[in-house]
Image (tube, rainbow, N blue to C red; front, top):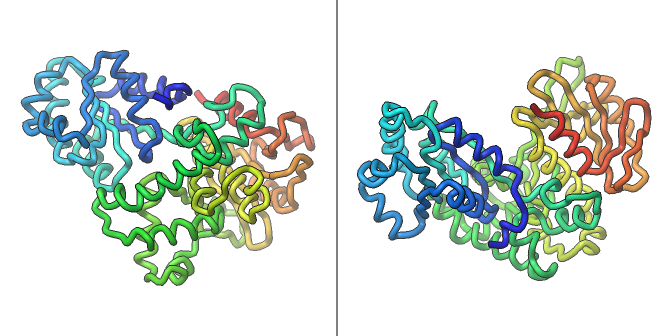
Length: 397
């Protein structure tokens, strides 16, 4: 109920996708609003909704071909699809049967929390029949209808999970995020078949929050929690697969310089960063050592969430000190270079100028927490996060 208070930008894309393909998979971490969005579509299209965490709904699908075969004229929404991976094979047969009777699109909407098994099953079994979309936490364009920095700061501090962002107070928001982390560690991750000690994974997650935006060093992370590098890498893969962690790759270009090749690692939701570090509110955040890295990660995540399909994100760093916080690579070739500063009087570092000299990006921006856009130099525009997000959306098809 609460998540419907804010319209999700993905709604139109998902509806369009269902008009084009027989099955769509909507991925995203738990509690991000997938079910709320799916129920809106169900009401609009008269769809059948089945929750595979419900014993009653699982019982209906004990003979999936029999039950679903009687509903080829309606959209069927299957929530928590990872709970019944055997359905993928049945869905393939049903989709092919519908195709033979000229029903080619809008048959199934599958919701899941991006388990490795789910992606493997759907990718292999439904190849050519399925399209993927990712629902992320609220972004700056969904919650900030104007250049109101207070809304942007609230999103930064609380993160974008609907129940956290819309909580009645900072204390309730923090409690929700702490409970979310505990539930993931103690209940959700074991459901995906990964038997990892909850306390060990918590320490790993907290360490990543302290290391927000730093270069990946698996060996160092492993030493810090007392496991081997292979185990630490598996923890990293798990959190990435569950869309809770992002590896931002380094840009590789033939520029004749020694390039940093390790990815940056970021906890994707800023609110989870702050909950993992027990940061209670905006004032506490501003006095915490993670403040700069948290702001950078928040900006990166928002821009990548709103970027048009096919736009890829990187960072650039050389051994000589050239550095660009975020590079956006468009499918048709152009590069946008973005410097991120938590200052109302921002100035780009020398490394940003050096990086731009190396790569010659088409556009150069500096994102800051202020509201007023202005040109800093003939090549560099200073913008708020919201304004740059709007530029990105406008640059899409």
